[in-house]
Length: 201
Image 1 (cartoon, one colour):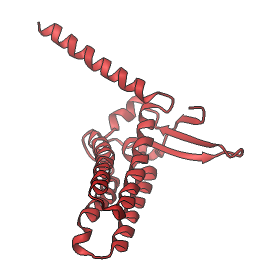
Image 2 (image 1 turned 135 degrees about the vertical axis):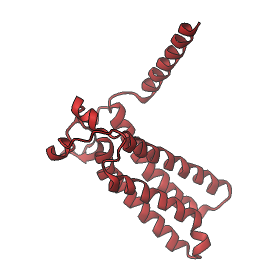
Image 3 (image 1 turned 180 degrees about the vertical axis):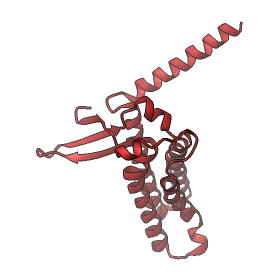
Image 4 (image 1 turned 45 degrees about the vertical axis):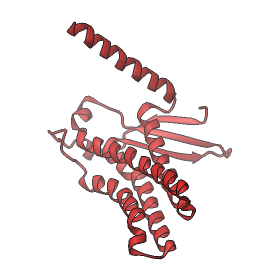
């Protein structure tokens, strides 16, 4: 895409980068990890239970949209940077053209030692699982003719889906074709499996 820009940048302060964390499995940013899941899980819980506790559709809708908006902002601007060293954003240049920027932290051997695998798992699990749930809710609302909830569910799909798409582009590189990346991955898995079978026989 000619309008995409991809940059490798250091997203952490020097002070934070030099902190020694000997265990990769420790959660280095517990507050960020908590809020990465809190807003998105809260929005899902409110959607599932709001009709039990409130008869006001407007109150439920506003609460869910506020939680989704807080989640979108927190994941896009804070938790992605802290937990996995990725960030995406958009800016408009002087000619009025939109440019999408996908940033990733430059990986040095020292930083790789300090990466928390537990945080990475939490980040990607929350990022992938919640949009899938909102898609399921969308089909459920559509097929059960709960059309007033369809707008709310669509907001969940759009906001959380946008973050998922942005972070996938950050992870694989903005100029790579996602289809070719998936084909390459499947090819590697096929070769690995056949090589393993040959060695055992």
